[in-house]
Image (cartoon, rainbow, N blue to C red; front, top):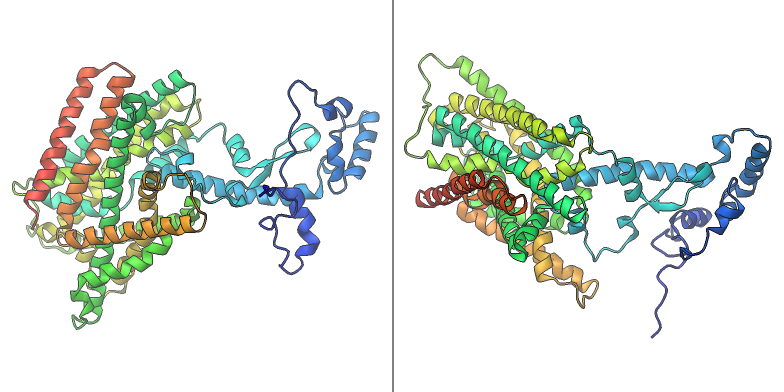
Length: 563
């Protein structure tokens, strides 16, 4: 059976002829979306440039108004006048500019989401090979002489326009966005476990170690780029460069476990808040509130369709909405805590500086809150090369601001509620039955985590699918539904884990931070640095020892105090 060409001029995916009025605009879409012809060998000159050096290529005449523009351009050049811009642009340019602007924004959202959720994975790691539609390569125009443009991808144009890289302001914003998430809500309970003074000191120490390891990672990235001459080095690539496949596999395992843990904590958080609303509104008369497993089970059909989405940039807007909802919730929580402190009588506080019974649980949560180290490499690579030397100062000052913000939020909430601080801090707010604001915060924060869940699971899906679904002998359609079934199974797995961890959320978060996050945050960066940069061995070894101790001790304490 002969091969059927896939680049037909009137390919259906370009423009659906069944749409009303589409027959009048189809030729425009074909002109915008058709592929470029095969180029001649390098040994041959570009004939169009030789014959039409000033006017442009002969193929430009095939565009709408081409003969008219060619006539105007030729006359202007003969008279020695400057060619006006209107004579250099066709009708397709006006259409192309709108598409260009729209897709540049889409590409920016794509890069922003990947930067926040890539955890050291490259853009290629996020592409789903089974999606071969044209949306993966939207078109933009590439400027050449006299404003005439051969067509290229929007992504390419976006990369060219962003070739200078991110500014200091954008870098700081991205770092803040990467580190402020759901972890901050678990800090008040962590302060209750560790005590006020111990927790503040521990949070600063964790931030200092995290910053040190982030800079170790950037040093490793620079070393690999010098060796290979390529950019955009991912966390997994550093592992593979250091210890081969075993290094990449170790990074992937830690990433998968930590991301699954985050997803499980989201299910628990939503179950706690929605269950509290049902109980308060129905005054405990609803049986569903007492069956937490039902609330967890009901989340499965909610998350499953979201995990079937193949393009990560489709979550960009939902991620932005989730950020706004989280910010609204944090402002309300801190405001209510301050009011409670002001209304409290003197000497009524129940908080303490050090909790000798459960201080070890704080260690894992402290690392959990700074689990953004995997985001450092894409943020660093996205910076303008002229200001990359400022990155150590930028990351240090930004992390300092974050640790002050975290300490202030957790300290105020813990001081307001003392020993009554809940694992889910929204449960400390007034009853939803008497406070519409509380119900709004609980619903909006739950909605924010629902929208964030597929993003947290996305790296897990992409990593595991490379192992379970090799690219050989796939059958389109059947292959897609196999992957859909696999993603559904992952959602069910997170729901099952959440069910067993729902009554010990603080222990569960400490276990995630201790066992899953510490290797990514402390151990791997220093080990890779000793291998790739080959200096600072003693300092690296010290941090590795601290990391191993924290991982073992925090994990043991989280498991031993479970229940």
